[in-house]
Length: 112
Image (cartoon, rainbow, N blue to C red; front, side, top):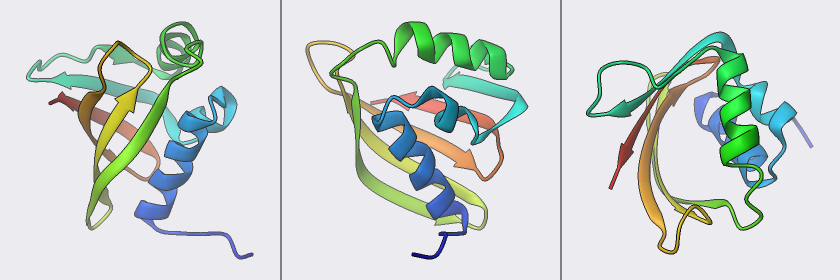
């Protein structure tokens, strides 16, 4: 099987690592200086790969039922917008939009 390339394939590999709760593989998608935003806020909620790793280790990948279902994906050049339904965070699924690019340096989350 050939290795997939392109922004959509890159983001899919990151989503697969998320659903596998594979922190090391998940973090490979991010730059060391990654910034994570939660809209409508304008200040980053996480700064840097160590903070991202700590957050996902303590608040995501320790949840056995955590799973993100891809609802829709749009690709604009090197930017990818995923609409996902995340289960396992609370009693009800959470709808989010994640905007990313290959070599993820910035992520914006929008809750539905």
